[in-house]
Image (tube, rainbow over all chains, first blue to last red; front, side):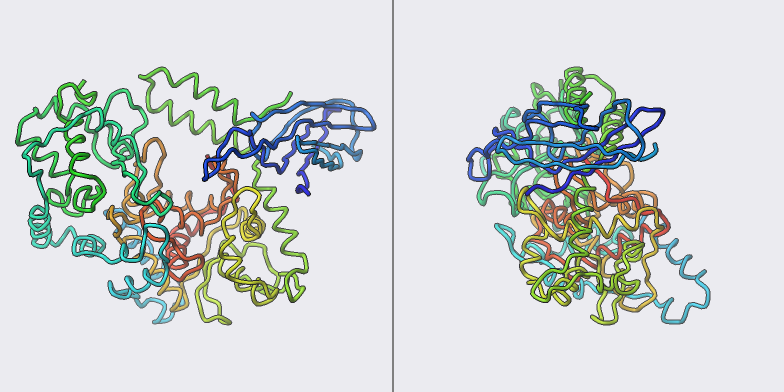
Length: 105
Length: 209
Length: 269
């Protein structure tokens, strides 16, 4: 199974700043290995962030995103001490969900 | 080399200031050449085309690895004389190849690393250290700029001989130069060195445009 | 909304490159800006997290954690240890760097196979290296700590002196030594700035920013890897992981960085 994400969420004046790192190879499917054979595509396709049962971010990704991606986004209306949850799914069907508590920014 | 001396002086100062340092604390530890070579042989293992014989130093490598070599004027002159005698000029007497090939050789840095395929053609990697053609902005500065090398010096036979010899064995002209001995070290072939000579001196070469 | 730094920066570079006459200073500034952008969200943290788990987990044939491992400041102490390594260890009667000491603990305390650890010391994609993760974690606990590599023990002095010899050791078909590229100030290889490791400022900046996440490889690289790959490019044979020669060279370079605040795991191109 994939490694946990590193999620940091801080709130200031009602605005939440979310920074997260995901551990993923993000293979494009266009690279060749040392034997000259194509390395199969393997990348995160969907990223969803939810807060209080509501989706605050939904993204479709492709092979142009770098290995071990870093994502930074903001949304408003969240409270200190509440949790944000992030889920990614990749093109092999692998999936990972992690949570973080929103702290003071 | 100058900086090296400075750092050492600084280290010495720190040691001298250290309070109540014992006599053993201040004692200079000397490591001899033979001891260093033994440690190198213990510290590496053969891989791919790179075997341990690469760690065996020849006279030039040994001399140029010692601190203060530049002060040994007599040995420096002697070294240059010996290295000059090692240069093998082409039997056909022709020193100029094709600058187009030369440009390709100057651009590639592959060859002779244990990660490179054995027997693959090595490059000269000249751009790693030198500025050459004006169009190539990605050049290093370890060596001097060679832009307009032929234009300023002239494409004379003497200069062809110098350029070929310098690429073949730079130690012959400047002892302990950082530049590899591309001919003597078996890195480049005679034809490749001719092509690089042309890159430097041919009036049509981008180096002289 | 979604920002992925690397593609954006590459795009900027691609836009600039057709302008043949752009000044070198712009190139340097561009690279600086690229580094700044990368520093936010360093994936090295992923290695640090995995390394912390590896440090605390009971593993190996002896089902033991590394929390009894002595990295120089007592069993289990991780805080600040990297700023004082390499150093002399009485129990092995040897000067050791972090990697060789971790290897010592993993084989001794956990009963893991040392040769297997050495073989997998440098990770590649899904073949991950526990060593790199552990080094990321331990070094992260020295962030901000001033480098204070000791040379009071005779064997530490000996290692420093040997490291200096290794630094100047010319060999191989290309006659290269470490000093060839790292013995003068203000030099570049292609567009890459080269630190002069004999100059205090450069040596400090270089040493305190390893280990580092290499964006071009997507891997966290340790100082042992840094030396290994320099020697590969020097056309030398393969540097033995944790060999005395590698530790001596590390001791030389680490001590030259004394006085500077440690600032890694960092991020590099």
